[in-house]
Length: 160
Image (tube, rainbow, N blue to C red):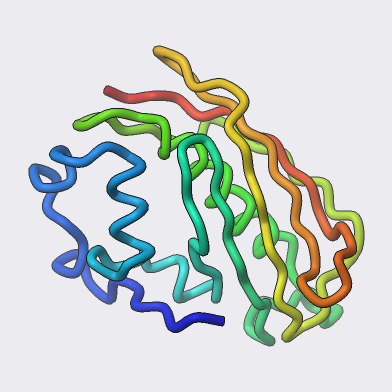
C-alpha cells in the first residue's frame, strides 16, 4: 500500500476558507497527491483514497489486528468505515466550491470476512448528486483473489 500521511491534528487540515476555494474533486485530488493531509480516520483504519474522478472513487485498505472483533475476524465497523468513505468521496467529487455534505444513511452487506492483512479495493460510483441529496453504491473486492467481500449503498445530504 502507498504511504499515507493522515492528519494528526486539526492544524494539519486545510482551513475552511481555504477548502471552500476548491471543488470536491479538487480537494480529493489534492489528498491523493499529498498536498492535503488524509483525514485521521484513514490512518486509524488503515485505508486510503487511491483514485478519484468525477462521480467515481477508489479506496484500498488492509484490516489490521486492531480491527478484529472478539472472534478474531474483521469487525463490521471496518467494512462500514471504508465503504462509507469511498461512497461519500464519489459524491464529494461532484460537489462545487464552498459546498459540503454529510452521510444520511448507509447500508453494508458483508459477503465474507476479509482476512487480516489482505488488501482490498472498494470502488464506488455516485448514481445521483442533486440539489439536496446524493446516492452512491460500492463493492469491496480482494486485490489478490478478486472475490466480492461486501457491497454497500448510501444517501448523503448536501449542506450548502
